[in-house]
Length: 228
Ligand code: SAH
Image (cartoon, rainbow, N blue to C red; front, side):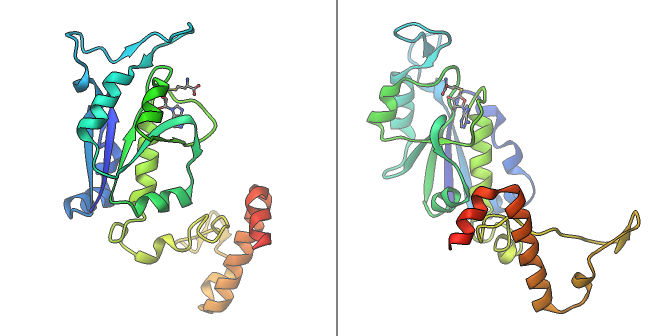
């Protein structure tokens, strides 16, 4: 069983979209599990304070090192990777999702305010992970993104084991265009080749479409693809 432990100030928004459809089914089959830890439970004063002002001045508040560290120490599993969702982190991508899908469990910290006290990050050996070059108000939506992308890689989660094989990024290219019934819709017909039943021709057409789309939309991926 693969497990995510999420550390958050807003535990009630989980599991949210992760409990729906195939992911909900996979959870009831014990393919994966979500543990939600309320960071605030580790606060010790009567107001349950989790944040304080930054040394050196500046706007906003920071999550306190003592509270977050206590929460982690009480809940993390031996040898588990701990991620902190942060715009400063290593960019999350399909390969990163694959690496994390091979772990037994992963702890994920959702930040808030201006971030967290730097000392927790270094003393608890935390990996910073970014989902892109933009700023969110909190790490929760990023945690959904990260966990969602991992779950679909776990064996038994998607109906068809092959369905991840042809997807965007799997071969370094973006996905080819796809069509379903009706064959003619608003006077537009489905490309002839897809109706031919000739699998090698279809494969060839899809590859050339993937290449054309990638070249135009993602020159960065295209350059890498050409080199391999
Ligand atoms: N002051 C910080 C931003 C804090 S945003 C900075 O300039 O780097 C508040 C919280 O939202 C962060 O602690 C983080 O957990 C989350 N967050 C914001 N943007 C993110 C991103 N691009 N990827 C992952 N997490 C993000």
